[in-house]
Amino acid sequence: GESVGLHLPTLSVQEGDNSIINCAYSNSASDYFIWYKQESGKGPQFIIDIRSNMDKRQGQRVTVLLNKTVKHLSLQIAATQPGDSAVYFCAEVLSGGYQKVTFGTGTKLQVIP
Amino acid sequence: GAVVSQHPSRVICKSGTSVKIECRSLDFQATTMFWYRQFPKQSLMLMATSNEGSKATYEQGVEKDKFLINHASLTLSTLTVTSAHPEDSSFYICSAREFGNRKSTDTQYFGPGTRLTVL
Image (cartoon, rainbow over all chains, first blue to last red; front, side, top):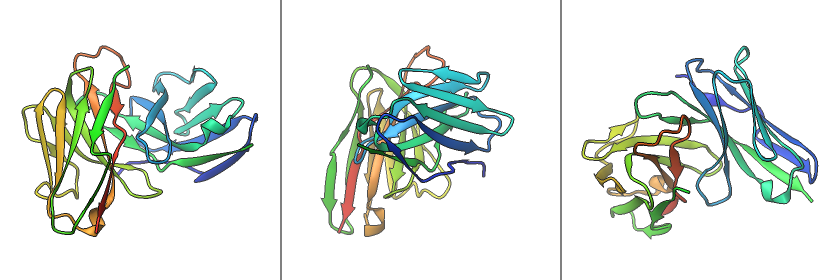
């Protein structure tokens, strides 16, 4: 079946640097995409989302880029902080019906102080 | 903001027993709730979609007789793991979709998860 996947399982970044987490998806019918942050032993926390008709969306210190041509999604975190250390998941959603969220495999971000 | 709670947060049980996990939307009504399972260092896998007042919809490969789901009200869904075995040990997470939410995206709110350990 179609799925969402990630290129890098672990990413180590120096504190203060920018982080880029990538994701490849395969379902071209997905209506929007979401990035979640999950800290150890906790549930996923919404970071930012983007609709399929958009290329870029910015939030506080985060930017999501969507390239539908190559089915690629990325999350950019500016000035990475120790509190950003977590596992990040991209997810895709098909509108209509129950709006099931399909999660990718996740990337662990380690921030080096 | 919308809050989803789960109870218990951790549970340890003996093999062969049943365990019930509750998922509650605290400040909103949820017609649809979702149950996920997450094994260590893996992603969240959707188990089933729970709808208030109707039968749950299970994902392929999930045994409906083993994972009983009840969505009795607009604020509560329960997942019962029947005759639990060590391989059922996992992190179970629920999410709730807000009824009548007019937002275009992300109407789902996730609970904090329940760590189940079966001895």
